[in-house]
Length: 317
Ligand code: SER
Image 1 (cartoon, protein in one colour):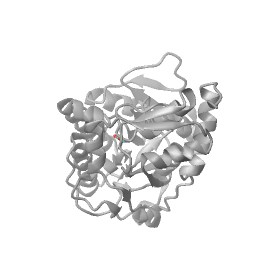
Image 2 (cartoon, protein in one colour; image 1 turned 120 degrees about the vertical axis):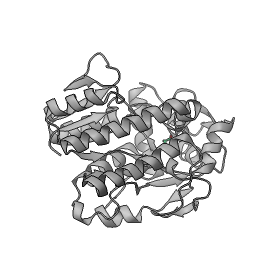
Image 3 (cartoon, helix red, strand yellow; image 1 turned 90 degrees about the horizontal axis):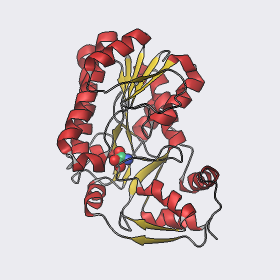
């Protein structure tokens, strides 16, 4: 990676990834793009609607990019509310990004998700290669995306790479419209209100990861020796698996008066129920040394510390 174009650069992952890439590869070597612009944007930035293939091509070409990191997409709950729009954005954007990468011979990364699995997938220690019959539009997009990335590699020799991210937790950019987002919101509410109402039911396990590990995973996979990659796309990666009462108990160790109630949202609960409890990341470990540093305990300490500074607040005691 030397000249990198990032789509969805203002999103949950993109907004932190761009900063990390710029610190490693040089500010002028990372072109951030998104459908909107925020006022004080540092570094190279261009407006890009990923459904506009010509503009995507022109921006990548003019920037002399050698790498495309395609992040622009709707998350699971938003996609479920507007499936046709999700199809057009998630699949249209991905096809354009793959085509531009083929035309300009760019190394390519796009994330898949635990959402690429469905109710018939083995729920525990979910294998790298297994049944994938998702029941959400987001999942349909992710499976199709995984297959397209494999297709572009085998058919055109494009250097496509990707991971199946679990729920990502960060104190920087709030996620929008995901099913795993409760595990982000809970930290904000613990600090600002001392209580949280979970829309996910007690006992619902899902895979999760702290954002610094997710960003490092993208870079490690992109920098890995391609000849050692057997899967290339859609590597299972996870750092931890927990259910709501476990993250609440972890927060209570630091904010003893924190309480949690449940008001289950049927749509997001149905999505969560269709996903694995805990996936097996061993292929990623074996093929490119995937390694997550944060577990629930160390992530909680860091999240609360950083969020308290950000929100300029003390824990409610
Ligand atoms: N965090 C995502 C979501 O909940 C999963 O990929 O939609």
